[in-house]
Image (cartoon, rainbow, N blue to C red):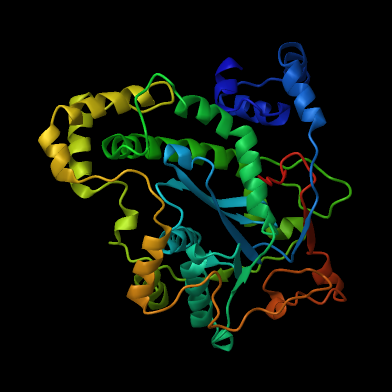
Length: 410
């Protein structure tokens, strides 16, 4: 428990039980609850006091809509996060960490990697207004139009305003409660000489920390996607593990709107070249020459497996190797962490010969059902006819009032 609390200091008994099971330890719910009440009374009281804000989003089924969002609260360390969530299943399709989340090409790459791996895409994508979502909106619309000529000239992306892009907010809130505290305990080590404004320190940090952080995120996402949601009698929401709902929608009497794609098709390759060319510098963790030397120094120190216990030690050893080679560091011309939003937008605008605004305005927007507040892609955005009883049974009212779906309004 002590080791688990380092990583998941605010996890409840259900999540602790699942984490223990992953470590081949079967502990009853009663024992875990008794432990928490005895040794963690403050945490128990904090969870009881928690108040959840309820908002609503309608989803017609699996792969109706994919909601994406960025997370900036770890940028003080030089880490930028991004996620994509299916609101019907609650499945986190990706949660990625990188040195930026402002580059439109990077956001489309996350989406493209996801659909190529899955072999299908959704009806519509959804995000907050913002120029960083330009390539996603255009790229997804291009792919959908390539598969359905009737969609020619239409935007298959929906922009949400006033914090109504709820599912990713929930994912971030859960992450901040169950994952981030343990990671920040490691990141905020006061005994280490690190500033993301220092070019050398930041590049060593990126090289060491981002792969390790991503591996920890992958474990967390797998836990979320394989955990059954707590049943809610007042909600018409599938209560199985997100992975199972995603793969077996019929078992939950739900519809699946996935659009099959061929990862090797010309339209996928064209979208990739337009909006996320593989050789673009944004996909480099660090400059190539720096990567060469970092790998060399890592080998010299014995290529240790990076863990939360030694990650700063690895950082310091590689940093020391670089600092003893001052002429090399000067030649590398490294940069510290900075806001690259404007630089990214100019590059994309010049390459595609377009003007980028907060929303794509040169395609016909999806229709909107104001009365029902449906935000998916069925029936051109108007949603399914609820008079069809078979179809109506697959509709889910997705709200944020359970333990795992807590909205982050910071």
